[in-house]
Every structure is written in C-alpha cells, then in structure tokens.
Length: 190
Image (tube, rainbow, N blue to C red; front, side, top):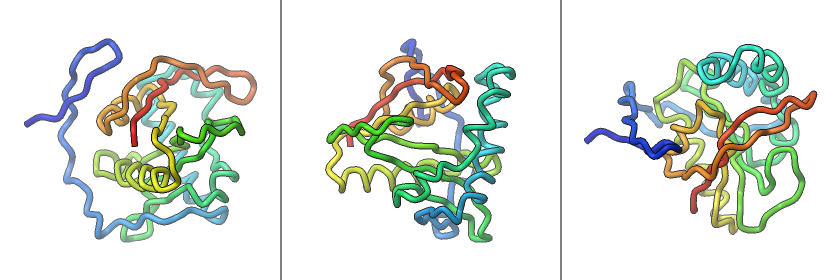
C-alpha cells in the first residue's frame, strides 16, 4: 500500500518510496555537544542549501542561509540536540527539541518544540529524520510534554505530515536582519 499525506489544501499526495531504508545497526544517534559544531554544520549547510532551493526564492535563501546553517550553541549545550552518524562516522543528520519556541525563552509546560532538524542530502529518505524525531518525541514525552510542535520549512512540511503532524497554518519566522522566513506551524500529540 502506498504511503500518503494530506497537504494544507486538503489534497492527498503519495510519498516517494524509500530508497533502501536505513540500517539502524549501522547508524549511531548520540547527544551532540558544543564540540560537534563542525559536524552539525557539515549537515546543515548542504541540507538547507540543496533541499530548500526548490521551496524558497534564491534571494531569500541568500539572506538567510548564513544564519541558519550555523550550529546553535544553546542547542548544542542543552543535552536535547542529537547527531546521527553513519558507521563510518560521517554526519548524516542532526536535530533536537526544546521546551521553548525558536528565538524565545518562554516555555509552555505542555508543548515541546522541534529544533534545527536537517538530514544531509546523501542520507535523505533513509530514516535518519524519523530516527531523530522518535528520539526527540520519546525524550519530550518522558519530560512530561503532551504536544510537540514544529515550525516546518516549506520543503519540510511533507516530512512532518508523514510523521503524523497536522498543519496549524503558515507563519513567518523572523531571522537575523529582520528577514521574514515563511514556514508552516505544525503539531502532533505525543
């Protein structure tokens, strides 16, 4: 049976079949630390540069990529940000969660937030993002959260929909320099 998801407009779209799946025995998911900044950036830069190109205008990406392809020191020191490595040690994906939305310090005792997720383009559609999400969801649930929210990039909406997130509608995220970056606010019960 083909897997599918429902878009914001209500249309049903089929998901592409997975290429070869993910051999989780050959993958290592671990808590990232500030010393992993270079490895995280080795995922963020090609992921965001290549995978967002189809969803955003080049001029918008030119203004935002320098900021969003840098590892976030607060996330790296939080104990809630993870790095997935292939058996070779090559970084394949990164992502985490926090009790507060991006760019804010206020916490909601029920709502956790997905933060700075990325899969290296060489590792897409192999379960790396799902592995990261499942770890984040389990940890957020164990911390007492009942809902998890993502501010999904336009190209990331299908990924989160496939994980069971529902769209709450479009939002704009304020980036450094005042640039507004279109995204989709999504949520899922834990």
